[in-house]
Image (cartoon, rainbow, N blue to C red):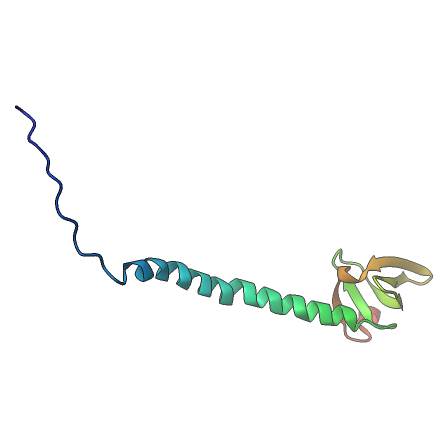
Length: 108
């Protein structure tokens, strides 16, 4: 009596590009994320790997912990770093953050 009957309406025509247009923002966000975050990080990791592989005796380095010294010996996964006269510290190769220009330690 007080409530009227509700009848189903016929479905409208489906949009043929609706599925693609719904995914377009998601694809665009992934492309932006790739170029702004993932690609530069991969480039930095590649450069760091090349630097670690090129370590040689006599290089002046700074570790990730901030220890500066001269490489005395290079092993498979560790390097021996002389931080003071007759003071040698072992560090993982991956812990080496930067290779300094020659003569930098004398200026410090």
